[in-house]
Amino acid sequence: MNQGKYVYSQLTDFLPKRVFDCLVDKYDGNKHVRFFTCWNQLSCMLFGQLTGRESMRDLMIGLDAHKSKYYHLGFGKNVTRSNLAKANEKRNYKIFEEFAYHLIKEARDTSIVKDFDLNIKSNVYAFDSSTIDLCLSVFWWAEFRKTKGGVKLHTLFDVKTSIPSCIHITKASVHDVNLLDVLQYESGGYYILDRGYIDFKRLYRIHLHSAFFVTRTKTNFRFRRMYSNKINKKSGVLSDQVGKLEGYYSLKDYPEKLRRIKYHDEETEKTLVFLTNNFNLKAKEIALLYKYRWKVELFFKWIKQHLKIKSFWGVTPNAVKIQIYSAIIVYCLVAIISNKLKVDRSTYEILQILSISLLDKTPLKELLTNQDYKDVKELNCMQLKINYI
Image 1 (spheres, rainbow, N blue to C red):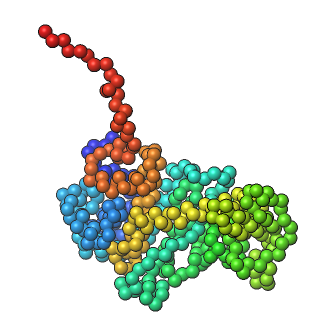
Image 2 (cartoon, one colour):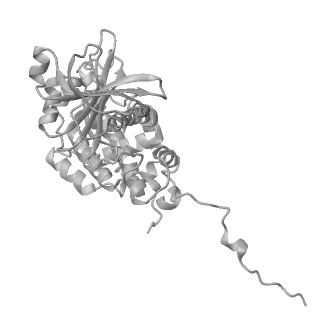
């Protein structure tokens, strides 16, 4: 039961503080710390993400206006710009990274499958990356081009639950295909990849883990057809062929059979060619499965627009990673709250309500639940008549 807590304090109650404390002990995060602990640092970072602060100065102005509430909000005795800046610069970002992964697991466990129409019991993932541009003169370590810097956010996105399963942050100069070596593949899982990830040696590794991939072919793709499956051209499928790769090195990297499907999309009036190692799903289902790759694109667009990962409050690699993982923590926290409180609102709506209500003392469920104010029971009650003498 809410006892006059601020909305922000009610939010942080959903965070497993014992797990965070264990991670702090693991990486000695509070070593030589007297007042401003790692938990205070996390609270300030999450507050900045939820309120949409543009810079460290912007964040500190907002915090200074509520000094009397520091203890109740979890900020500690005092917060200064230098303390927060030094904490983001020196404290190990692994604390925030592993805590984000813990919340990712909790969010996926509590989420329900929605917006997925195919009858596939296994997990379905979309893997892609997005570049976050940085000023090279300020972020000198993030070399990308001669006059441009940046970092890449590589994301393995769980299509069924709309929760990122794996997050990797690298320099923007790192090629996307290299991150396929980092992933741990699930047996029976489906991995949807853009054609920029075509590397037959790495795709064969997915096949050896008894997992399936769906990708698009490049223009110089060479394929030797062995036989064709029956198709229904009314469904948009133009061909469904099984064969092997042509070329000495390609065949050496991937010696097994592959399936090539040509599909015409009536909505975009485009003809697409897909490549997969799955021979059980129908050709139309393979085409529809690839269409779910847009979910990871929407995730990148959403997190860039509504959370702060484009303007940073520190310039070191450690500070940038802490801020990005803080944004992921907020995203997962909103998903956990939505699922546990059974809130019938979008993530965007929940975030907008929270951003202007963090210092209210309204119960969280009452704040986020849709209320029908026209349905007032008192209007239908029988009212006693007053008799005048």
